[in-house]
Structures are given as C-alpha cells and as structure tokens.
Image (cartoon, rainbow, N blue to C red; front, side, top):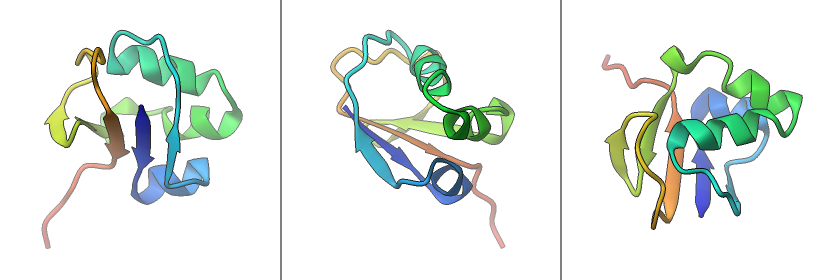
Length: 81
C-alpha cells in the first residue's frame, strides 16, 4: 500500500510517500509498525490527537481496517482562515 505524509508529518519523516508491505489489520496497527521503525516515525506519530488519517481518500479514524486498502494518508487537522 502507499502511505502518504503531509505538512509537518512529512517534514518529521522526511519523505512525502512510500510504498510499504504490512500485516497491520488497522490504521492503529500500522502506526505501531511505523513508530517502531526509526525515531523520525516515533516523532511524527507521538501525538495522535494532532493527527488525522484518510484511507483510500476518505477521512476515517485509527481503528479503520486496512484489508484491501491501497492508500493511507496522514496529515494534521485542517483549519480555516
């Protein structure tokens, strides 16, 4: 699956996207796998209250299943202005 990172998430991880193979069942499981990779992932996912996720371009929550998913995107909450 493709994992996309936006805004400060991308800045902390250092790349805009990557293709990964995972056995994660949910978005939360995927985050656990990513956090275990390196310190930069741990920093990006340290505060999940400041993070939003979309699965196949649909806003969802961290317990969303990943079976059959092609794309997961992580980004900060959007604000108007």
